[in-house]
Image 1 (cartoon, rainbow, N blue to C red):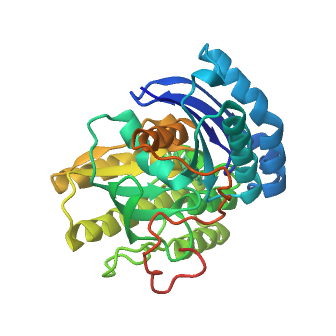
Image 2 (cartoon, helix red, strand yellow):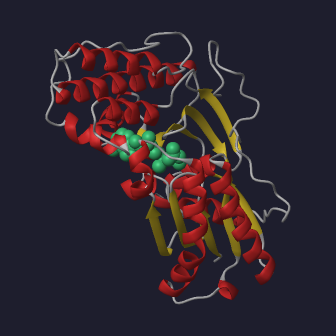
Length: 344
Ligand code: KG4
Ligand code: ZN
């Protein structure tokens, strides 16, 4: 058994967890910065970095205390080293380096996206490689073939906005505040998903890429028209998003590859309507469907510690001069999607 301390600080959650290679989460704490960022309607990088710096050290102490252990009994220190808001990433990574140096334990510099991608294996010991992964978060919307540790084939990405971003912008347009995803999902429960005609960008296009910018603009026009109830806009937006996800995944599955399981991860995977639709899609293709528990979907440190466990088990570690990376694609060989803007 190996015990790994994990640190997450790439966006607006400060999180620390202790996880072992037998999939036991010994302790974890998470502090959201929602209140700090809410007045601005989105995450302010400077405020985020400062909040991580204030909270991280006491949180590490508290998690070790919760688990009744100390640094000496940990086998490695893992921290998100990118991609993300660089100030926050540096706070977490530098703290991990200091702990690794002081304790003489190995450092594991974790790709935040790999944390999300492997989180379903923390929850489900039966999930083996390869699997087809829909990774949907605030910054990413990708379909990946997960073939092993550090072995990803990106089959699709978004040519403009990530889906979580589209949820957050829809929430802003409807005056629901930040963070938007859960608020839109709640409001959608009371709305009619067929009430507002909204586009399904890229539906039936040959490559399985995503696009959500046009959908977001259509939500804005629907709101400005004054013709529709907010709940109907929320429900129709969510329905359009679900149809886009299912259409694009169907394309990826038909393109080829034999995956026993369809897996979803990332913050948007906490959405119940999306989970239900994906489960049905998997069944139609005779695939199993696996979604991590809600708390493992949104940003957390257990997934970072777990990615550390997986790498530790293979005898991997990183050097203390590992530099924080604002961008860090899982599949560096993936070609840019045609029509894509700056995001890859
Ligand atoms: O993975 P995550 O916590 O952070 C990133 O790495 O981006 O994802 C956050 C995103 C936000 O855009 C948030 O609005 C969205 O996930 N989200 C949801 C739900 N819960 C969180 N979107 C739709 N429905 C939800 N229930
Ligand atoms: Zn994330």
